[in-house]
Image (cartoon, rainbow, N blue to C red; front, side):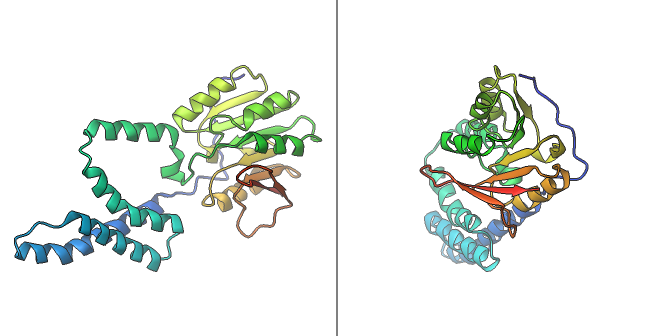
Length: 266
């Protein structure tokens, strides 16, 4: 097992920035709050009454949902906008000491670091998916396999145990999940566990790439794979197909969530 291997920066591909999208969503939520406040505050101020915060929170939620729908935001952003103000008001009524909010924030960042910047939440592969991929690569000798966003090693560790003739690399940038995966893979000599950004790794070193991310980065990641992976190599996307690209093969996994593995040959 190798140590913390630094990732060689890739010159031909870079992470698609999500900052612009996040700033737009922040502006949308602030616009909704400002619009409601501009209409409600003068009315209640003239009557010398305080704002009815429960009603105000739901008014902001409805306005934010309307704005998100009019601007054709993805469905998950619409849900976030609709729930944000009511949840913020509800939590404020619990009188929780501020230190607990800080602790919860730090814990979430340790586990879900990829979600804010790259819109990639933590998904854990199950044993059925690992078995399906093991069958898929069974006839390929000495596979050089990388898992982009490897989580806690739920895919890579069983594959490395199954195929001692091959080499497996995991890329993870969330501190706590990286540490768990590092400990789980520590005794596997054919498994390298790396800390770093998946967009900075050079994919030319691998003939099989697996990603279980989200719909957002798939188009850019496929372009990176096409530019860097050697001819004849295979890119596998767990659950999220590459937009407007026909996979060479779709593997149906017989698990509870009906996982589909979309396989693309470079």
